[in-house]
Image (cartoon, rainbow, N blue to C red; front, side, top):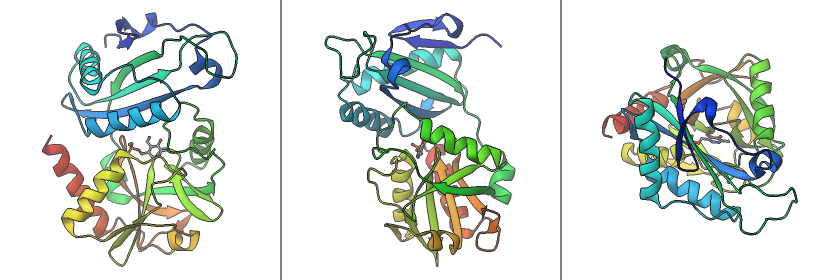
Length: 282
Ligand SMILES: Cc1ncc(COP(=O)(O)O)c(C=O)c1O
């Protein structure tokens, strides 16, 4: 396979030749944000929503957006074309830039912009057909989880906790209430009704959150955003997780306890079919 090509500050380069200075604030402070957009047949899925979230993350930490939406799409297209047109996962990162190390924002600094792409590897069919296992843990992250920050240590530790338990995700609770998993949003189904934690500072609003709202509305599945206790999660008929790379997956055990009847449920089946139809309509 030929080497991946990345776009660093507007320049296409082989991955092995892309370099950033050690004083980049992304490296020194984790001072930056990122986005991940899935592309099917080279076309961004929910691209406008991802770029809007990128703009919100940048605004939240006071980094000027280096590109307009159409410029971002053009830059993404350059990288996608350079790497071939199969299903891809585009990763974009913007940091505050390179400056002498001092915590407060430096003046007159150019953001560092990286765009790279990897093959989009979706979960195996078995994960959807049999469901996946998760564990729970206390959410120990900061209180600005709505920002898609590259400072991901809390999420990294949660993902590692899941990996050490041999499961797909770590579902987090803050003060007894559901927040989200290490890199997915969580959905709880009871009596045919879907519920999810509110879109506030305690979770990253996944782009699939908006998609789920649309799918539930179109299918007349009631959906409410509200605080969800541990008891509600463990007492659910179905629990689902969503992300760009997982799409939508059914969770059948949590901390070794069976969810519902231990099989992927009917609400999952409907929403997953709706998800695939939305992709097909791209
Ligand atoms: C912490 C967190 N929550 C939720 C999500 C789901 O977001 P999306 O649907 O945009 O992939 C992600 C995605 O990586 C995430 O990292």
